Image (cartoon, rainbow, N blue to C red; front, side):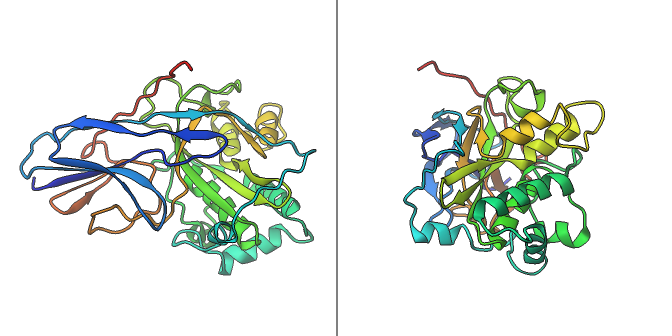
Length: 314
């Protein structure tokens, strides 16, 4: 009913581990275009349909090139990163404050640590030890880290656990950021939980994290996937990350990640271009509005989409 609009995230990340190409689209929309949120850098295809269109449909095709990331801790490799970029990744966001209980938690977890790498290691270990994967959480979670700490409910999914890691790093003076994306292929690890199990990746959204270390530049991190393996990889909940099943991924995801995943953006507090509705905490799922009201992107009864992936041989 009324005018229908949609916003579909498309990859906007270009780094040494991902190259994002242009996206194309087809459908019965009245208009469509690529738009960037200037404040956050998120990129999206915006589409609108004529009033009364009973079956609004759009198909978006994005193409990226990805590769594995691996950090050599024996070789220092600082990067030239602007002061503005570092400052941006130390700032608080609506869902990731850096004061109050977040700062208090960060200070306690990093007590006695003086270097950036030691602080990050302590926070990585703290998140794995004190949080847990909660399969009942909708989607990838909300990422409201203050509420998590205040309620002492430290269960969640990647948008919760990695957001907490990022917030604690920022509160400790270490630049950090979430990267919102989706798994596109199987994992090289012998874990069913760390890759896309089929070409249909409609529920394979996953956010990762990065920290900036003075001697190494931006470094890959993913404590949330360690928690996922510990909770869901075996019938019994693994409580010790040094367990023989969890230990390999616990070690690997501090400084490394696989190229079986595609990043959309680093954005928080995203304005959906042209929308009069509220900002979204992050843009990792398609969004829509009809009759001027936002549709729940995680409600399959009101909003239907399908995401598929296939490899193109180079």
